[in-house]
Length: 102
Image 1: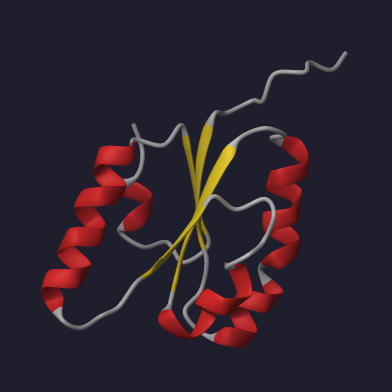
Image 2 (image 1 turned 180 degrees about the horizontal axis):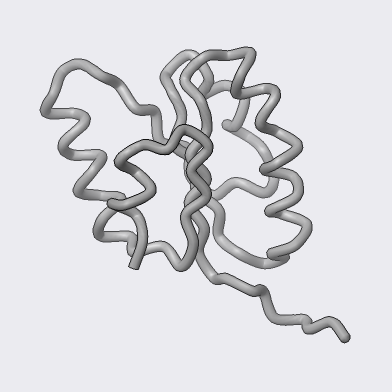
């Protein structure tokens, strides 16, 4: 039995910083989009990998994790914390998995 409602309303997908690794994470993103139709999906990745996800029809917002300056990273952490995602899928096992969850 399937439901028309998405399993989660908001999802944070934390991908890799390197371009090749980000490309290889696309099947996982596609699976999320397929199994959570209608969900708002945001992506965190490195600045080099941003172009992989920008313009993707299933992605609402792409956040680039710039390691410098430190203040930019702190602002990103705060924004993700305020978004309070229903689910966080963190391929990097980073701090974003903790910060983005409800």
